[in-house]
Length: 473
Image (tube, rainbow, N blue to C red; front, side, top):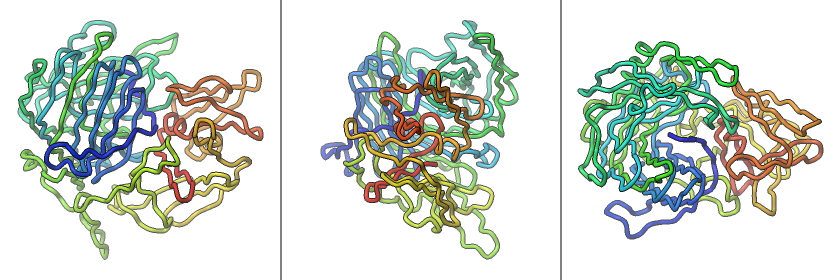
């Protein structure tokens, strides 16, 4: 909830051999600083994230089928989430009806507050949203009437009543990048969902996500806030750009700090004609029939994306900043499936791109699409900073490839990256947010750590250790 900033840095990867039944090959992530990791397992994207303040430790375990657990100790804010991220430009309407079913065997906290439910972002306008299925100690509903927190009535879905609440985050990090952004939050908070600390009763249910989207559009009038002389207006649009839909376990405690745990044993997500499920499925998945995509005339329907989990490769030890386990296509002309976030939802085909490929030491990048590759000349090649083992890439050519604009102010040695309605600034020699190091100038070109590109421009970043190549987009 607080300072949700995506930072793709490496997390320690180990294998747990003494966990409960089914724990073989569990991927276990630990980190004590502000950090996150994203990749895809069995059709699910996932993320572990913790605020840098007060964190004594977090632990996230991902099973091969996408089920997961998370534990945190005395953290300001920590999130564990599994679901699906969507390519830039994917509208809610194009995805189709969306629902999610879950079985949770553990959800508790000994201190601080905790949320469990569905989480995501939309763009156009930029909105962070929650469907809170269960909570401990506090929700934003407690703050209605304070500042810019407003109650907008209720909705009923899947037999439960939810309060609809909006609030504003002022000059905070967001999916638009490391620059500070003002954006609206929307919450649907289930009225019969409060739990006591250390209560361990299992939880299960089905969430009609599309019903919440429709209610938010109908019930929430345009909301405005003025910050520093600039007026911001936001209203939920059921055809906005959809960034992600994730099942989330979150702990936050502020100065009290939070400690707790959550274990999600089964998860089933349906969006349009697609269904992705953990191996055991869910007791509630009967409400979510697995509908096969219709084939175009003369076309073979694509295989169900949850039919067979894709083996996930080991992370490369030679590139500590980029999380491992991400499938990178070998042949640009090959059709690949949704494991690379490239679905053409209108035609049920699976084409990817455009993607930029940069190779360490090479003055030529490539623009990759399903039709082939096109060279992109670079005036200076990407390199690995030997001191911090950070991969450095030229920011202008990547930003412009991804549709952003870049300007340079010589007097202040500052680069400004404008992407839609947001902007981020980089000053040479100044520390970048989140401990990412500093930008440098090489051959009159500004270079930044590659994970900064992911933060500012919202672009997935992948690494091919054998080829020493970065894939962006």
